[in-house]
Length: 444
Image 1 (spheres, rainbow, N blue to C red):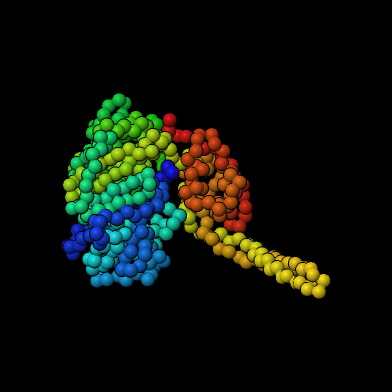
Image 2: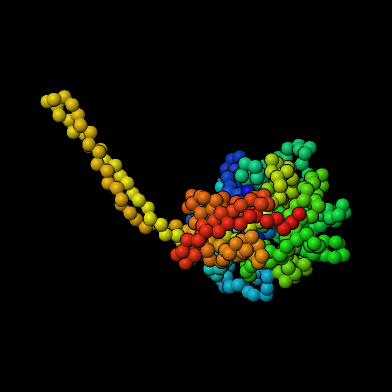
């Protein structure tokens, strides 16, 4: 599903961490783990100190981070904790956190008995509402550095292997790239095609980003939004919302692989001052492009292998409604409970039986479920012109009750073709209001 809701990028202060290592604890030396692909990002099961959690697999993060701790992880032990500060995307604010060491992480059959992680208590750092499922944290480098990780986006499965037991297969349709590491994060070289010109770009491989590409505007390289763009909300970082321009470029090349008319986001320079300090960096490649390949990440050999999959030729799309929706707030509704009880009365003397059915109906109860709430409305967008407001709770979309659909299924409606009509019923302070508008494409 081509949905772009958020972006995670984290700078971590430089501390001396204890040595830790993931090892596959079985005879085969590998394990396969199913994952959920939501908004182009990978969600995997992770067991932390015996507590089952859901983590984002994010190649753009150095150390594991656990957030929304008090709500989602209150049973989790924090070992050997000390107070530190994290710095996030967007400004110079510092976020208080804890650094914990000596923890046991288990991912499938991979075990690390000496894992460090950060704990963020700020309630605003919670990505669960943006994805519609519980998310407890993010993990990246520490897993990738110890194991060969095959990401099969087609099957929604990762295979993790001890490097010593991993065997590469001959693949004539694959492309292999050398990785460069800066602050424990992987970079590759690719080409952006703008006006039939191939522009070399050095990009962070960021599986924690749901976007296709982030590029930093650079007039000398002819990289930047010209006429075919619109200003938009791009996502979230540790320091809050990120804004910028959305557009398309003519193409994107990963050696022999060429993607036509990919979406690109140009984040405002306010949010990228630290990113630009990395020598030669041009931006990031995110999940909307990565999911079009099956990928082998091998940090030990400093290489990544791409093989195109069934998603390769799918059209790049984006939210044409101008509204952003999250799974927050609550809906109250009445549920009726009907129970049937049938009693059988038999008259043995006359040889017949009588079936008597007793029906108990109209047992009512109030049920509370999480709501799909509008959290952003882009100025002059179809949603804004229709009159939708931040805080509106979407009850129905195109005739369907939103209680019966996931957040992804709801948002998918906004990624349709230009001119598609959207009919919404929203709850605004207890009053039900109908709205309708047509999707509008701002990028040609």
